[in-house]
Amino acid sequence: MAKLSEKIGYALGDAAAGGITWKVMSIAFPLFFTNIFGLTVADTATLMLVARLFDVITDPMMGALADRTQSKWGTYRPWLIFGAIPLGLVFALLLYTPDFGPVGKRIYAYSMYLLMMAVYTAVNVPYGSLLGVMTADDNEKNEFSSYRMVGAYAMGFVTLLSFPYLQKMVGGTPAHQYAVLGVILGALAALGTLACGLLTKERLKPIRAEKFSFKPFADLFRNKPWIILTLIGICTNFFNGFRYAVAGYLLEYCLHGNVTVSGLIINYTVFMTFGEVTCMIFGGLSPAFTKWVGSKRKAFNWAAIICAVTSIAFFFIPMDPKYIWLMIAMVILTSIGIGFYSPLLWSMYADVADYATEKNGTSSTGLIFSSGTMAQKFGSAISGALVALLLGIAGFVSGTDATGQTVVTITNEPAVQRMIWMLFSLFPAAIALLIVLLLRLYPIKK
Image 1 (cartoon, rainbow, N blue to C red):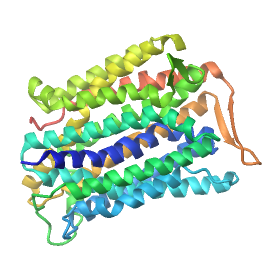
Image 2 (image 1 turned 90 degrees about the vertical axis):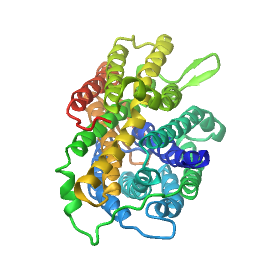
Image 3 (image 1 turned 120 degrees about the horizontal axis):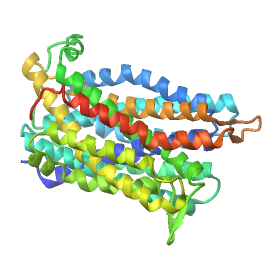
Image 4 (image 1 turned 45 degrees about the vertical axis):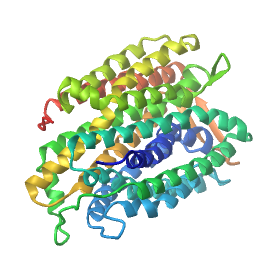
């Protein structure tokens, strides 16, 4: 039976990766790259698409490499212990805006973003795989997964809520503010990752293949639960990715900037913070909800339906700052569904890993969990790229002039506003309904 300190330690891993680095990358980066860093909409979309092609190669390779790691720290923990500082350092560099021209900025952004994806993969794939070797008890796996989600959403809540106030405290230009916050948040991410590696234990020994082969990769595509769950994982991250990537544009161009209510500054990070705290609460309730409805698949299904209905409802809210609390209420209701399904996804990956070990005779836990992180990055980044591309089609133009200054132009304001509103509501709703259909094909009944 794992101690509470170990569960908290495991939670710190996703507090660092999911609650800090990935949360900022998902919510802030599209707006940061176009409005502050000075990339064009086309460059921003291309950057994220190129990074995804990069991840298609690196994620499975990292999973296979992690499965074969042998050290005095274990199989997966050494990647967290020694990857912590590079993760924080590269994240800080990514939020720095160099005083370069258009070509120099493009090269810097592509180099740092791809390096960040590589470091994130080297830490997060082994982190996810830890769940498969810390315990053999299915209920305890659900508990670890729930702690993980609570840690991610709790830190996401703190990160997003404090963001505008930290910017105000730092002062200076937006570029300076992001650079300083990159250092602060990068240091916190490094500490959380290191603490996770030191506080957790690997109790189970993976059944290793004697030598490297491509058979585990081929086996994945004969594993129906893995195929369906990976598609579901991509969809959940498309759902979150559209909403996170467009939130900054929604506040800036649909509600005409930050909304201040009774002294509370509601910018795009604070707007999404209400969802984070809801996800934290209902992520903690997810194991009880799953027991109540009878299975992980049924619980996931109801969560996806909640997300679809509330996302459609958001579309019909008037595009006016005076309805800000109604918008926030709908964000909270949507986040109930997200909170319920988020822990389930990783617990179901553990089930798929067990299924693969029984079927094939050797462990491919790291490889299978790497597909989860690949789905996370693929869904979030492709949705971010689509947001940039569709906004460009609607009439949003950004770039850097000859002096290195960022320039943003809106050629068709009503069309841009309408596209933003749909990207936050109807697009995610369609993805949630697709998840419901995919769950009907998922064969594991736990």
